Image (cartoon, rainbow, N blue to C red; front, side, top):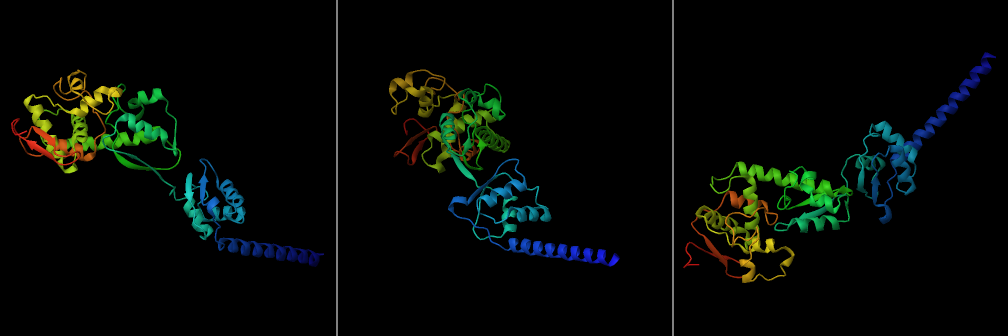
Length: 326
């Protein structure tokens, strides 16, 4: 009887050993099989909250891997089972399963772009955000009208000028609010650091004053290298109590009434932004200024010029110290 039991145990052991050997062979064979990526499945999405078993099943159903069970097992053996990062991934044909799992746990998702251009208004920026197909639209028109409280600014504060011009990379389904929060924080951080390193001036009392003047310099400058001198013109005028007399501010104050031409009557029509009828800075920025415009305002050229005029459209300007020379 004992001999019979021993034989049965031996058979079971041999059978188990055979199964384990076969499984080990299959497992190692799987790990050496390159994944199959074609145009239809080259972009793979890991949904938020997905576990490894779900992702493995999805990979198999798309024909990317041959056996989800081995992929799941490898994830657990490697210790990466709980390290999946949600997002879109660009897959490369021919890599091995270990490289595939490393990709899906790396967080190196496909990035999309949206550029905020210097000199654009908040209205322009909102239109660009609304039209971007990879941004998740969550904000209503009422939200946009009160955006500053949502992005971290003061409630009721004008959003004009507060979104830093730059090219921003982000994964699909980044929300419109997340995008604007990022741009606002970037502007806030840059403006504050630039303000702390400013050259002394009596006419710019706050970082917001600098932001306002930078927006005017941005709109008035034809050539980038002229920004510091254009900034000096306006600073000199402010110091002398002169009118700024800048057309872009008048145009901004006209709103939808502006159709492409500015007339003498427009210069004479008073609005809060008409710098021909009102002294000092405009109530808010008139556009979003670049880092270079902010730097120019806080580190202007050393000059006595108070006039300038473009010699050619979009070209170099002629700067003057007196009205007669101008």
